[in-house]
Image 1 (cartoon, rainbow, N blue to C red):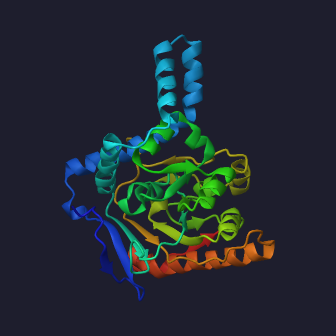
Image 2: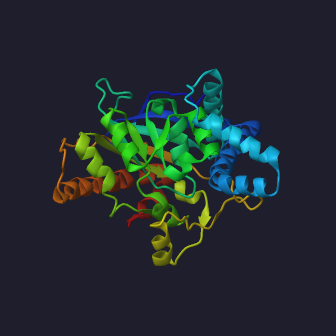
Length: 339
């Protein structure tokens, strides 16, 4: 199957890259495309229903719909029990990994560096951009076999919600993006992944202009300096083209984001707005590691220095691979806005 890890060498640029996943739309059947649509829509519906689960529970109890309330409580108990992943979880993960990429007009994931996994492991922090409306590229990485050992850190409120917590535990290695949790993961030597742009980067999503929100995101760089963790910038080409999003009113919307309030108004397919648009090719580039020194208490200047280096690498990845992702004509004029 073309979705399996190929470890196939490709050279879109002078640097060696390793293709770890490639989905060819020419060989995708209608059934596979339908299963891909089912997979991605399930992911988004679970995401949204998780945020509403406390309200659903409250309404169920007030309306004396005790069966619904009991179901939510059962899911909550299962989601928080200390169980380990078994055959059922692995089957669910394999099903998603095989079928999710089939929905799009091609999916490819490449790693810079020429060796996956590397012969000498170095603790790594994967910083994924852009967030997009529903982190589709992030979801593809979450179930990719190459990333199975990486702790994917979700917004604390999302990871605390029972439906999403159960789903994410079943298909990967999730965690909380809360600062104490992130400190614990990195202190224990774990590899972690995070979309540092957060709600703000989701708000800025546009089908016509690539944007990242990173200028004021220093926290992950500070943590990586504290524990001497390498950072790999990741860019998901095509993420912003999956959903249309109302543009403008940035100051007000970004201000609400600071309080943890999402301000996206998005839609995909006309008959089911939560389904991503068709005809979008997704090309994910995992950049080479930025090797940081270990500085237990880094100064603002040290954090700023490495933060600037990170932004420089992120821009390099975009400029170097945009023609591969978008084609020669569109790629030559494509630019990424850094907010």
